Length: 89
Image (tube, rainbow, N blue to C red):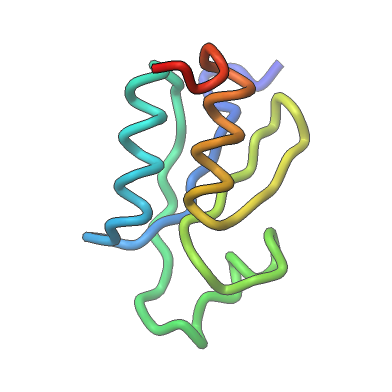
């Protein structure tokens, strides 16, 4: 068991509209998650590159399913399919 640690980790930037879109969906689905804020300089985002293979944010790791992905549209679709009602909101 992971204890109190949320299964979903979101790698994000401050004031990033794509990141905020993912945050909104996480909140709508009432999913606990941990935010990890990354370096603003694209070339410094090695932590994100290690987990997703890219330096782009947002990126998530879902320990429940073993899924790691980036790109906000893909993440939103994944969250709605996995935890929502298939996106019929």
